[in-house]
Image 1 (cartoon, one colour):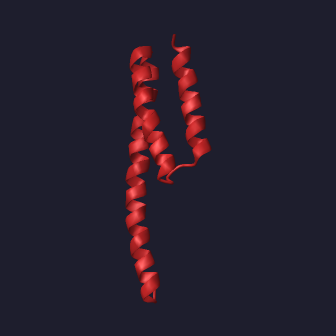
Image 2: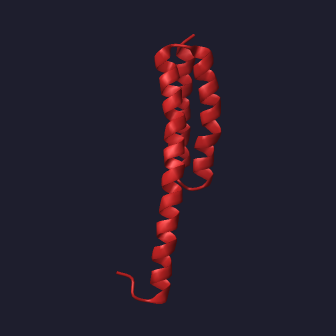
Image 3: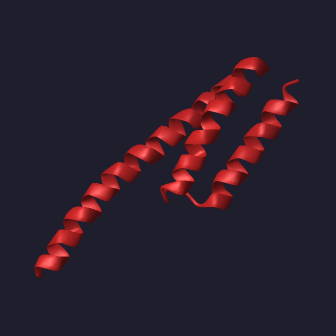
Length: 87
């Protein structure tokens, strides 16, 4: 349990950041799920559109520190290759 004023403030800040980061991760996963569903349906046009909308969300997650740069790049690469394979 936090005792000093500084550690109490840190605990409050950590809680706030946790909620914000949780919302960001959830939003990113939602966009990725849309791409997955579009790939599963087999419609390349819809999948391509979903991928283009997911890309900025992934990169925003990287810039906000929610996700590592290489993780986002790997996810984008794998999704892009799967969308391309639908052709």
